[in-house]
Image (cartoon, helix red, strand yellow):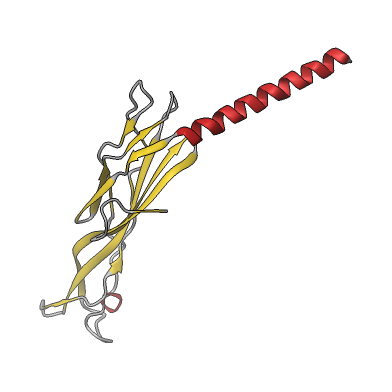
Length: 176
């Protein structure tokens, strides 16, 4: 019985040490520089952040973007009328990208890009052209623009860092 109790205490101590070691590893990761973003039409690209204190544990980054789609309507005679209402584009994601890590436990964010895509074609009324009788108008996509993005850095499924970016805003973003 005494042996069993000692064994149980040793097992609990090992589990606690592993748990504390994992927590300490996450707490030691620091952002040496923040990643910056560049918006370009339907896409946004984040790059350049630098992290240290990773040990040998992989680090992942994921960029997601949202934006707008703008349309022109053509009446039955083929005359164009620009839409008045931008429509929400379908968001995009880079998916998780493993950040290259050096043997010194540092990682730098490579270029990671995400792109918005066109939603299902809206009606002329949804785009805001043609008035009430515009059911015979043709709607044509003019442009897609990424207007906002979020970059999340994770390690072993835990979020370590998160930044929000907006088109025309600070390229270093704001913490989530």
